[in-house]
Image (cartoon, rainbow, N blue to C red; front, side, top):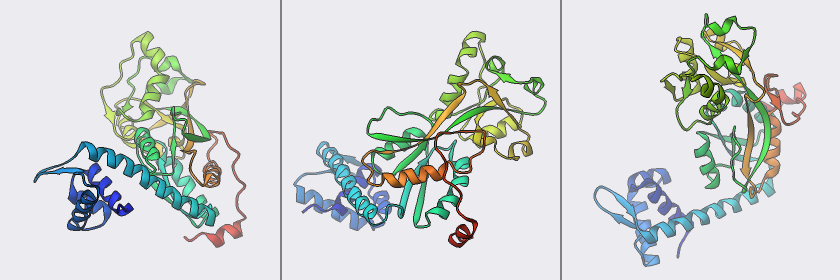
Length: 323
C-alpha cells in the first residue's frame, strides 16, 4: 500500500539524485529511506531508480510516478491548509517568497508590523529570483511571492502593492551631479552597471535604457553583480552608475557609503510590485491581510496601489509585541 511518506522519499531521491542527500532532506537515516523506497518499488512492481555506486537515475516509469507523487503531495498539503484556514485564517506558517531586490528593503518594514497585527502568523521567508519563486509557487513549496513582474500565469492571482520608481545612483563628483534633473537621454553615454542574468531588475533596467542605447550606442560596463548591495558598492568605488529601485535608497545609508541617488525623470521608469498567490490557495483572507500590512508605513518614494491599514493603538501594539 502506498503512503505519503514513501512518496515524499521518492520525490526527494528524484530531485536530489542521491540517497544520502534525500535522506538528509527528509530528516531520516539513509538506510531507512533506501529501505522504504525499495518497499515502494516492490509494492508497485516497478523499478523507479537505477542505482550505481556513483549515481542515481530515474527510470521512465519513475518519472511518471514521481510526477503524480508531487501532485498527490500538493493535494495533501492543500487539505492541511484548508483545515488550518477553518481553524484560524491568520494563524500558522506563511511561506513567503521575495525577490532579492525587494526583500532587504521591504521586509524590515513589514515583519514587525506583521507580528504586531497577527502574532499567531509565522512568516517563513524564501529569497530567490523571480523564475525560481514562480516554480516554487506552482509546486506548492511556497504560499505566495512578492515579485516585480507580471507573469503569464492564469492559475495565479495578484494583489498589487505599490509601483516602485527607479532612481539613478552615481558616485560623488560624477557629471550627473551637475544636472538639475536626470532624464532618459542623460543615460545614453554613461557606463551603466547591471545585475547578473536571472534578475528581473537587470531586464527592467535594460528596458528603461533601450532607446538611448540604440540611438547613441551606449556602452554598458562589462561588470556584473549578483546582488544589489554589491552593485551599489561598485558604484561607490567609482566603477559606474546604475538604476536602483526607490526602496533601496531609503534613509542615509547610500550617502554614508559614498553613493548619491536621485530620481530619474521618466514616467515609465518604474516597476509594479505585487503579492502573487495560487487562486486555489484556501486562505485568500490571509493574503489580503498580509498585503494590507505590507503597504503600511512605506516611504513616499513609492506609489501605493492599496490603502494601508490604520496603525494599531500604541498600548495594544506594545502589549502584543515581544522585544
